[in-house]
Length: 476
Ligand code: B12
Image (cartoon, rainbow, N blue to C red; front, side, top):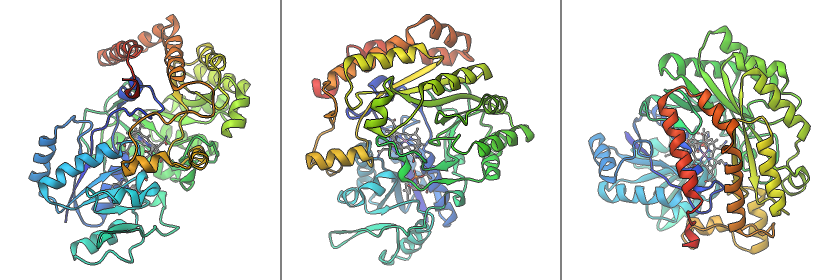
């Protein structure tokens, strides 16, 4: 059986936490989870083509041509909540022209399976990891058998959507095959801060041990790949795929400091030369010694959630606890070790005022950071915050959005007296206060590693300035 998987092009949405320039210039990143799904289809005996039309900036006709040339029996795609309709339209176009059924997987199938399949563009859904269900689905699909009784598979029968939840223990992250990165194009991937090519992304754990009300990630089971498997994946990246830089997307790569230490030591022992970056929670466990070790092992950047100058607001409003003293200590130790830190900050917190927002902007500019990202707090799908808002207003915006009942718009921040416009302006101002400083310009130029990187920064700077005058969709 031949399966054509499409990663559909996507663009900034009005409800996103990031301002437009940041979403659009975030980079061109590979569809890691479709690469995982492709590996599962291959394990089930399928021949798979994975087309990253987002990275290739393909037109509809180009995608159609590629799909026709491959001659698939089935089309598949990844659906997030944010990009649902854009992806749906792409699959609708392919389905109409090829007359083939479509299977969808990914986060939106976990959150809104019924609503996803209420659209004609989607015939089947894989809910959850697909580890057991993809194989069973393929067997049933090939033999034209009934999909009933296959946990984790959603389908349609006589106009009804049938949801079959996955088995509780289906997700075994460590047991997943290596993502099929060999199916992805080369020379096209980069992030806003990456410096080398080939570049890719990687995940060594799922879930998180924190319970922040603005983040959905802790709802995934907390699972880790064993150190040996992580090192094997690094080795595969370096030796088989000639990757020179990787961004690790774990919620907190330092959650188990001994594990991080073992990964770093393993990289050094195996002589694997690769630049990497990762997200880490601030805490006492990030000692100068550990930071020095990971720097020697190739860690070039760490991304840390600092969020706000007002730790009280953070703690009470969002269930996140961090110590300002520890933030400074970790950042200084990281810089001393030769690691470039990026701080994540949030604007529009519960009880936020213009002056607390500006205090956050000033805090960011006062810390030894090389990069900062300011995101507006939004009730992301699947979060405690989104559930609270849905309860209070009686409307689940995301569900209605998937059903096509509400337009793409800012959801609003009823937890602060600030308007969306004020939060947007405060967020943009925070960016200008951070980036348009001699220290940042100097460090950016000093550490440039290619003319391409200079071009990337110049383009983002121009877009950032023009963004000041850009009106969001609902203002137009
Ligand atoms: C890595 C990552 C990325 C990477 C790679 C994305 C990708 N398509 O793989 C990049 C940087 C490109 C990315 C982009 C975006 N991301 Co992202 N991303 C993640 C992250 C950290 C891990 C995803 C992952 O690989 N998980 C591991 C795999 C094994 O699990 P999985 O995703 O569930 O996939 C399995 C199954 O679902 C299934 N499956 C998945 N797809 C398919 C398809 C088919 C046909 C089948 C059968 C099965 C199947 O098989 C996989 C193997 O088990 C998650 C957060 C998290 N920790 O989960 C956020 C997350 C999914 N991303 C999120 C967001 C918001 C975005 C962006 C909108 C950001 C932006 N503004 O650009 C874009 C949207 C991209 C899109 N087209 O929709 C949100 C999703 C919110 C939502 N409900 O829509 C999350 C949850 C993070 C968050 N902050 O809330 N992301």
